[in-house]
Image (cartoon, rainbow, N blue to C red; front, side):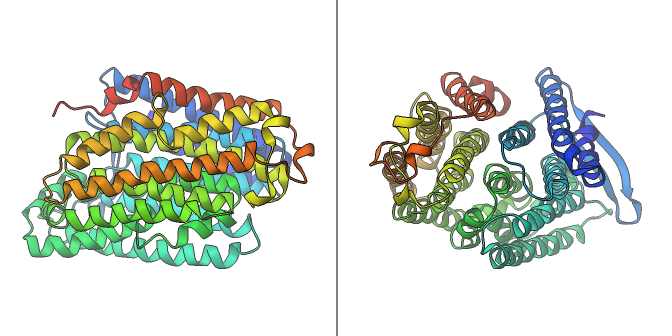
Length: 479
């Protein structure tokens, strides 16, 4: 029942938000998202106590597809992604209490539909069900991106649609190619693993690239990243948070759940190529972030660099690196969501995304500045913040990979740490401590709801930085 409710509650909430009067959409979204968070917390507690939460029912009998979703032993990454999704949405909605979007019914219904789809992606254990939820999560975001945001949102959303739709079709073809080898009709994860491992290496190569390209577009990693900076810049900030904090994790999660175990020979054969592309993402995106004057584009490129390191660690095929990536997927989601909310405050107060028109905020908004500095330092994995332990484990795993180029990969990926410090500290200087801008005097400090959101994210960053065992117990397996 808990698994069903995790998907059903936001789905019903979205339907009600669409049908009820506009003034009721916001409180309904808050109630729905908080209810989902409570259900997720109960599920987390039961999972940590050894319970397995599973629903497995006939869905499309003629195809052998089942509505099979849930949390079993060893599903720690799915638990982390479920909790991340449940945590982020209510705080997105709380941050909007001062500035409601136009067509509130449509906005909140689409946001809740996206939450339902994301929950389904992380919980699905049937490949066809996974694909359906993958699309259910993406479609509301297409509409949100095209209806809310900057002046170039329509062409940018079209580019986003073309990229992701092409990736989805390629993934569907790969799923069907594996399915046709099934001795009995089944899309189950267990069936796919046994079928994939029995395939010859030549066939696994094609399947690997079909699935990897689909997931790489969603992450994204170089050279499939070009849709992302424009989409983050032009989308409304709540939509950007969903994209950056949660939705890009769909690609990383899919690699761990549906690519590495299903296509093991293909994954091992192309490990070096994927790590190379991921390391290029780290260095290239970091360099691009340094030269940005638009604060949203800077953070967009920063996100590409972080995702690139996670992807490299996952393909290191080292337990420590993969566990570090799992922890970082959660921690990055928390940090980047908090950072985007701070950027939203900056954009609303200054009326611009251009950092050259900002400055001196520390003098007039000390509470805001504290939040910005702490969250920004977490984004560069400062020790005792939540980003440190996962990044340390990822570099450890990358260095220990069996690749003959492991030292080279680690050195170049390590450049991302230095470059991240450059663009992050530069952003803090320009926004908070630089010469005062024209609008700095009118920059007000945090309102009550903004302060609540900021305190929550800062506490999460510090608590998980001081006590990462809260996350490590979910995914740690003795090497």
